[in-house]
Image (cartoon, helix red, strand yellow):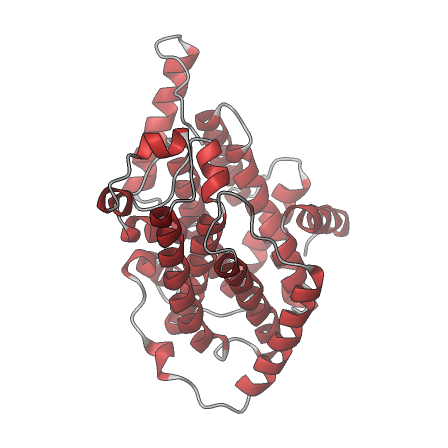
Length: 345
């Protein structure tokens, strides 16, 4: 389905750009591992296009055009685009899922900040849970309950990333901590960004993020048993490897400003072994009632868009609106009506 040369390109991109996923992917069956590497390569490309480019509005709009071309069956002549087009065609990938990712990247491009934890979860749903839902499609899973737990895992992983990157994000004038948490602590956002310091209050916020991520990691485990048996070890591996980052932060006193939490190759090997054990146990353990827990409100749109039998969803009004805003910003900057906005991520 995917051209071998394109797959080699995607595999190499993930090997260097997403170490945690690359490690977890090793224990996925080839029929899922290969398309998942292509999926992650396209998502990695999309993230880097926005994160690493100065003209972020322009980058998001280019991604919109590339995604349009993929779904029209005429992908750009680039390995990630061709590989993703093969996935879209071969797995009937719902358009709402990459559109959700695009919306999250657009939020980054407009330097959006998030007032509440629910708002942070909504962002996480778009940039992480959407990828989890696409992984379920690759595994042939369209059951709404299993999808809800996969989305729990995506939110947990993104909250872990946010907790780990507080200091690095601040240096780029970005903040993903809920603003009401800073308000409650009496911290001014701009003052913190100008001089990020691991105060007791900031470390407490990181701890709260890790606690919420841990809750969702545990809840997500109920869905692993609903996945194909051959896929369970790989998903457990992703859960334990990313959860291990939270453990590192705990050991650092939740200071993600002075240093970056890192996990070793030996630790990853240990978590892979733990994943094999848990995967084997899932074949004999009774199904947990947590599987049927209601989806997070913030991910419900992903579940309904992916579940088999749901009507196809067109682009949401919210996505159309944010893309229109970025389009106008691009035109204004081109015509010299406004200067580049500072603080774009």
